Image 1 (spheres, rainbow, N blue to C red):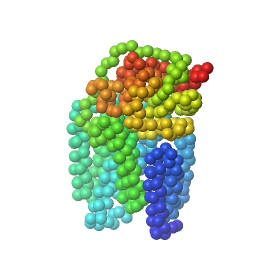
Image 2 (cartoon, one colour):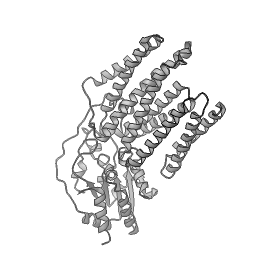
Image 3 (tube, helix red, strand yellow):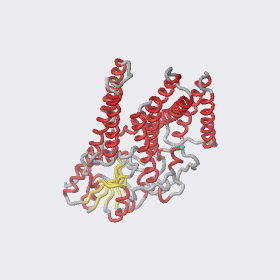
Image 4 (cartoon, rainbow, N blue to C red):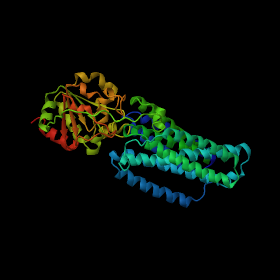
Length: 464
């Protein structure tokens, strides 16, 4: 058992390590170091909490830690990078559920019943808010997991009066909160908590169900922020300073990331987090025209003759695990003196930084992996653009079709290049559920098939 002073010092050290972890995750070069700081900080935090004063039931705690650690290792080793967004979503749901359980546990805690006056009211307000945020996070994350796995349709679920219903639910939550405080000490208080929890859970479902596939990366970031505020609320309920600080770090960083992503997608932040509040649901114009297909041999010849090549990866590259043959292709072309760059959209894939992690895993040099804003001004000078499994992030409709659900979202403007090759399995729409006019452009050719298989065949035809 450690003293309270040592525990406080340990919490301070863990907080510093968490801040360093977030700082390290801001770039690919320092990401591994950032993860290491986070691991060390969390280890210190757990040990300082478990061996702190007034902690009992060590047997149960240690058994729980061992079981959870085994599950964590197995999940980490089994889950593919393509499934990382849905894994994060379901983990967020656990944080929300934990906050709800902590809230109810704190409400019935005999020690809490001894509090008096303002101290009691403040604590019960913390309990109420913690359960409210936790319930929204829990159900919202479960729905996000369902959408990302395809078990729930990615299309926004809306109905007439949806916004009015959300407003009524929010007002009802405030009214119930007032009644909850007024009825502390009576059986009615617990019933009010039950009702509020049900309303918050329903609100979480409606909030995420109303968000379309194009905005799901923002949803993941938003749920990350909510899970942080949920953890912070749990910290207030438990009187744990480190949990408060850690939750605030996660909550604020997630909120900042969500705002940045909304700006990158030209989306109103509050409209997205409120489940598309006030937004008109659009479907886009029907596209007519002819699509040209090409072969692996022709693409290899085009790449060999080109002086500059821009590669725009998307979720299709992740699904097919094509990053390693893409790396081999890049090395071959660079050896021939070609200028090769990657153009990464802020929400490429289904998780911020998804493509960057995959390319780093394949040892693609960091200095040729550029952001969308860096490549768009120079696309006119690019000889060949190779789009690997991207769809919505290279859709001209975002700039040209006011009826498109992604209208106004900045995209990688690949159609301005001299030639565009798009690797796709079929003509199916992307995750946003909207057709792509890029496929019908005169300078665009489609290369059908699995991305990894296609890149392997292209590599076999380079330098023949």
